Amino acid sequence: MKLTIQRLFTLLIVAVAGCGSTEPDTTQIDNAVFVDTVTQTAMVLPVSDTVPAINPHTGKRTLMPALFCPDCQKWYPVPAPEQINRQPDAARCPRTETPLIADGPWPGEEAQPAGNGS
Ligand SMILES: [Zn+2]
Image (cartoon, rainbow, N blue to C red; front, side):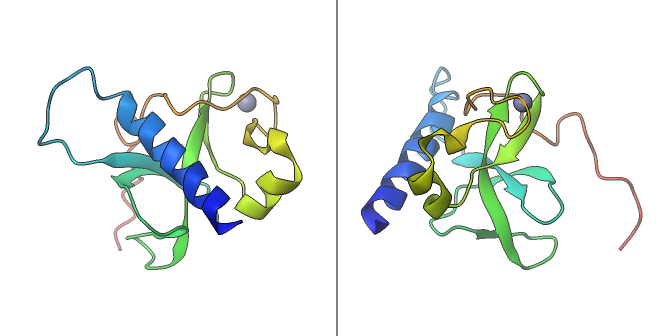
């Protein structure tokens, strides 16, 4: 089962990294979109070897790799690997059942967090 999980995230990372490969920019850090499973906030962070990844804002391991729903124009966290094993269609939008894709407008470019101070 571990191998399957590893493969899934490897595929995701490759898919996400692949969309930037049109530019031969080797200095680019391997970033990916993550969604905080608690706050549902999407953010771009360097690819992590371990998931859930640590949310730099909260210090908690709540970040899951995200996939984009072209219908909702929204990023959704990838379901837990156990869930995917049970239902192969887990990588679909929970609302519109659209197959989720790895390529979408990255968060942070349009939406800035409201300046509440900290
Ligand atoms: Zn959707």
